[in-house]
Length: 337
Image (tube, rainbow, N blue to C red):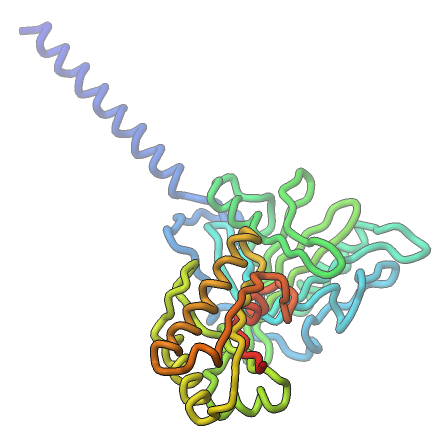
């Protein structure tokens, strides 16, 4: 009886220690340290309460920064090394990644013709300025240890006309994230420097605005008469040559165009962006052009008035460097012959 009691007590102690260990591990996984040293429970989703972000006044115009004396902005144009009308940026806030989209300016700082880049000068100038205008610091430190977050931050790589810029996961090169509002718009900053250069990524948040409009038969005829062709953005299923419902609507407009202009003959030419395999893109563009041609023929248009071909990514009308430009390059052209 005495042995049984001792065994029971020993079992309870083991179970208690095990539970404490599990709870401790759980807390270690869920509790993270913010930049001011306070504890915070990590959330499954990361967001930013813009009501708590300061609205700054008298700070000039986008992109808001100039080079301090002794440094210069690489390939400066409109105040930045590069400005993209629409991009995505992953922002680490200490408890996860906050994804933003909008207008992105990249400012790459280098030394002047007389002097090499001075990291201490860059850091002191930039961070004193940011603190002075009142932007809110969201994070300062190294890349997160969480592999998922590290991978997302690593997606901040941008290939532009004069090179590639991105947040670098390297020792002794922490990065900082700030946020502020100005004139009714929201801005978020990512800043990083090393011994060779300093970089500021500043994004003006905005929703994507679709600028591609539906073409009517009248619009198509006007463009053909003026330019010899009409450029259409017809929607197909992804990686397929089947028309989506709004793509069918555009084919109906082409049908109206041909029915009201009986002498008009059209070459239907398919184009893609440069994503994926070159040969596959060319085949896909050919199949999509054929889909449009045979759809018109099935609706009563004489096949002798039509021909089709595909060029894949051979003839872009915009650089394939942004999502918007790629969408423009994915097109069908109606060329008069």
